[in-house]
Each structure stands twice: as C-alpha cells, then as structure tokens.
Length: 148
Length: 491
Image (cartoon, rainbow over all chains, first blue to last red; front, side):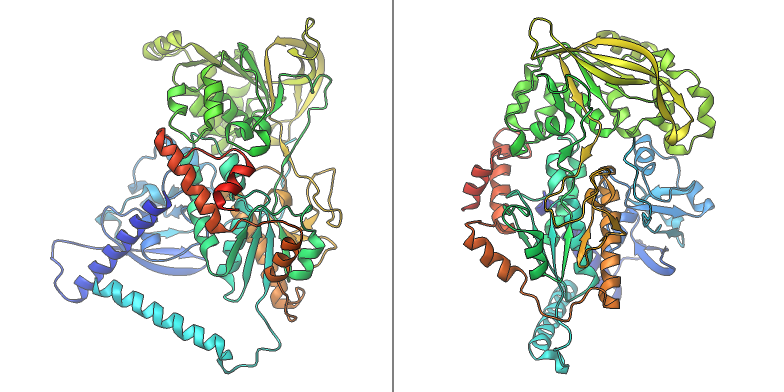
C-alpha cells in the first residue's frame, strides 16, 4: 500500500517536474494551461499552480508545501486535515457538497460556513486567482472532558 | 527527466556538503550545545506524530520510539475498525517518520518492566510519555464480571488481533446484544456484529474472529446511552453507516425523540446534521423502496436513550452467566453537551445474551516515579509538560484523556512539541550536556535479555502479514501472538 502511494506521488512529482522543464524550454503546447491561486497560512501568502483536474490536496503535495498533518488520510474522506476556508464568492462557485464530505468536515477544527475539504475540490480554470486559507489547528489549552 | 535528475543530484551534493560540515564541525565550536536526544514511550499515533514534529522542527534532534509490542502503530492497527481501511493511511506517514535517519523504533520493549522511566531520563534529554489508554472504564455495577459481559476495548482488540485479547472467546450464540455507550467505538462494535460476512471477509479482521462472526446468531443490537439523542458521542459518519448497513433495519423509539425536533434550530451544524439523521431514521415514514428493504432485513439495530445500567442479571439456571440487564430510566437536567442524567426511579429489564460495555478507555500508571492523577486517569500536565517533572512530557490520550480521532491526537502531539521547543530555546530543558541515548539503553536491554525489534524487522512482519492476507483475498492476515511476531522478525 505504502509502495503504491509512494509510486503515485513519485509519478505526480516527476510529471510536475517534466511540465516545468517543458515550459521553460518553450516547447509546451499552447492548449495546456495552468491555474494559479494563493494559500494563506500563518499570515503568509503562498502562490500555487496546478493543472485542471488536480485536487487542492494534490497541489499542496506537488508544491512540497508540507503543512503539518495535511491530508493524513491521503484524500479518502476519512479525516478533516485538508480543511480549507474560502471566500464567500469562491465557496459558492465550488458547487454542492456531498454528504460524505460534510460528514468529515463536521469534525474539522475551526469549521466555518465557507469550509471545504481540499481533497474534494478539483482545480478548474474558473478558479484562477482564488484564495484559500489553511486554518490553524486549535491549541487545546483546556483538558478535554471525558464525556461523563 | 533531466529536471528531476538535476533535483536528485543537487540534493545529494547538498547532503554530502552537510555531512562534511558536520564532521569538520562547520568551523564552529561545538562544546556548548549538542544534539538533543529525545525518547518517546509508545509507538501509536501520538508517539509518531510527536516524533514527526520534533524531527521536522529541529535539524539536530534525534528521536527514539520505544513500544511494548513488537509491532508499531497502536490503535491505528488495533483500534480502527477493519472496514475503515482509509483511516489507516496515516501508517504511511508514520512509516516515513520511522525510516528517517534521525528516528529509531524499538519494539518489544516494555517500559515499566524492562526499563524504568528514570533510566530513560538518565539516557535522554527529554522523555515523552505517549502510551495511551490500555485500561477500561468499569460500569461499577453488580454482575459486571459474569460471563457474557465484555469491554468494547477487549472485543475490538479481539477482532483486530491484539495478542492480549486472542483468547477472549466471545459467545455470539444469542439473539440480542446490548452495547452500553454511544460513541464511535460502540457504533463500530454494532456494525461489526451486524455486517454481512461478505463485506468483512475482504478486510484485515482476523480469521478466527471472522469464523466466529460467521457462526454468530446475534440478530438484534441495542446501543444504549444515559442521556438523549443530542448528547450522543458518536459522529454522523458512523451513524450513517448503521442506517445504510445492508440487510439491517433500524428500530428506534419515537418516545426517545420527544422535543428533539424543536431543539434542532439551536444546534451547531455538526450536532444538527447528526440529530437530523437520527430523527429521520426514527420518525419518518420510509419511502416504498426503503420500506421493502427494511421488511426483507434479517438484522435489527437500535439506539436507546435515557437508560443507565444498574445491574447485570444472572441466568437463574447458570449463575455464572448473565441473561439480561437492568436499566434505570433517566431524566435530563439541563441541555446541550453539559446536560446531566438524573435517575427517575423507574427500571427496565432487557433480556440479552451479550453485553459490551463501551463507556471509555482508561490510562494506567506504568511507573510509580511518574505523577499520575488516578481520579481523571491522566498524567497531570500543563500543555504537555508533566507537572513537577522537568524533562518529562506527555502527548496523546495519556495527556488529555481517551477521546478524539487521529486528527485530535495530531494536534495534541504538535502542542506538546511546541512546549518542548519553547523549553529547549529558553534553557528550561537543558540540552548542554551530552547524553548517551539508545547506546546505553540498548546495552541495558541486552543485559536484561530483552531483544528490541527494529523498524526493518517490523517490515518483515508486515510483509509476512500481507503475503498471508493476499492468499485469502485480504489486505493482510495479522500475526496473533508476540512469539510468532518475534519469530518472523528473526529474533
């Protein structure tokens, strides 16, 4: 399992590197396009690029952003660590959310009305210039009650 | 191709550069500071996330993880339900951490028995206790120890191949099972008890458990909680899985849901969606297709609210075995998460042949030198710093109590590391003197005849389990005894 995942990541990374090389050498076919956007994290604005069809989790991985614990379940809707918060307008344009995604979003720290899971959002050209905030994890200062 | 080749060459040359810099001391005096050596007790998610964050935060920290079992990953391996394999994907990130050159894993080492925490403190600059909660919260009612009563911790350990639960031998020859507790563990147990065998066959559930479940005569599972629908500790995904479980139908009491619809509007979204799902399942008349499906279902599950166990009733003909449970009926005082169950005096007896108590795990004290709050069953701490014990930290359930999902533990562990880094920077955690680390500990263990299992030896166990599983269409077939694990590891 680990090997398959590692291979998949390697293929994606090499794909990304190949495309970059092709772009710089000027041989990239004109019909292909990149979308770029920004991720906000800890007050820092990071510009990211991806191809249509890449999920936002793919982009975080491909760009080697290495956010702590991001994408723990590797995009299988079994956690909420790829939680992203969007601006109102962008959120509306992302379309309806499935029950499965909502169920996992419900567990996310800092859940908001414009929250989505990055692994479920695929990049489209319409999302050019979009901004998404990576929420800070909650430092749990209170000792958790044990439910009694 | 060229680009990625370029990247590899660049990082290799960088590595070589750093190596030489290290050997030559980089031109700086190295007497006053040295690489901090940290050890972590417990190789579950808390241990691994703590190690991961430490290694990432400082380029000079080395981390050693000590784990009692020969195999790593704790509850990710032994707690997460077999039909939730995606949740186990975190094993991949833990594996990366374990393989990092500044991390070492030592399995088959029992801290508290083979080693003391004091000995670890002498060998390392900091010790992080992340050994979780291996105990069980007892109901504290008469009859709790009759045969036929199990803790969810043991039942889950049994079907997940935890060596200490191998001989549990649960009796599934009865029709009705009662589960006390309504958290996700209770829902997992209900789902495993009622899942079609064909679905379980393809998971990493142990073969002996599968065989027992195949012969199971359990057809009705009641999941009982002390309070109401809006206090249930389980989450919407797991409740939805019950609603959608093939060949089962729900059996809820409308009376349990009085006043719940009215309370919906004030609930935060996660709680609201969960309550709506239960309400719909309990109160709505199903459409034709769903009605038909329910008619054909041969298995039943239901949530029962406002009920607390007061006595497990013995079988009059076999007094060592239980035959039922006496439940007290409760009222709720207050509302929301803080609502309290208050006895009304009314009682109800339910006949059943299997009781699973799922009211919480509990941490235990493994070393008398470590402060332990036995009332709350955690190590007293402030942001992960163990009180009155400099150099001693904790993360995971041992720190906050046994609730939360893997992501909770992730954040919990990162918070502890934040405290440790602050202490290193301020000098509160003294890293100026060199410490021997695993060198002295391994010498100690050898003298005591303890054989640590390294991560690559675990990988032999891993390969063997995957190989055995592949032969029968499962992701893995777990080794069930410590002896066999050690044998395959080559000890």
